[in-house]
Length: 280
View 1 (cartoon, helix red, strand yellow):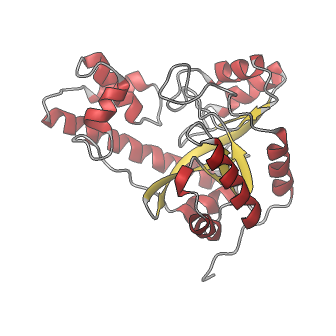
View 2: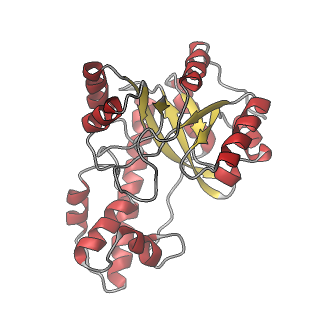
């Protein structure tokens, strides 16, 4: 089995890239993809650990992009290190993350919760700072008892300290991933994985869709697989693991993702083709 969706301390996970790889190897996984948010910073360490442990490591990244309903996540796979366009995209997205985090800390200040922004950034220990880092600071400050409570009361969509993201377009990110030699997979769409949505994203450069995910019931997984087959899309899957006991996600390697899905991705990558989009 394999697991193609997980996070490390390079973004909002709790284990270092090396620890993630060693955990996966210890579980007997054949291959994993490290897919931190808006950064490939953890990939070199993960690759080195994979060589040592005898497990295949694929460099990936999870991007936040605009969608008809607001925001969706796009996974990029087989991403090279040092690609200038990809690095610039991630640099811009991380800068937007930092600005957003500052705005949320200021909003909390207006509510009487005075977090020190520099301390929040230092505690995060990552350039890809996000709401989980602020939530952790809220727990340490004593404003809430748990990270889940921080989201429910302050940081979740529609809550008083929520600040929306500045999102790149789906097609912009897909174009850059393809230029870098990678593949694009829509992450954890759940009920939004309709035929109309997938056709729309395919026109914007989508290569595949995540079928196996902790938020997907067996029925949703089967439906996504059927839709992907009908539309000529790849299928992928993973645990979206951030660390033991973090959030409501499943354990590393728990999604029973078959190696055949990765084999199909390898074959598609061997003959790269960027789908033509309407109007071009």
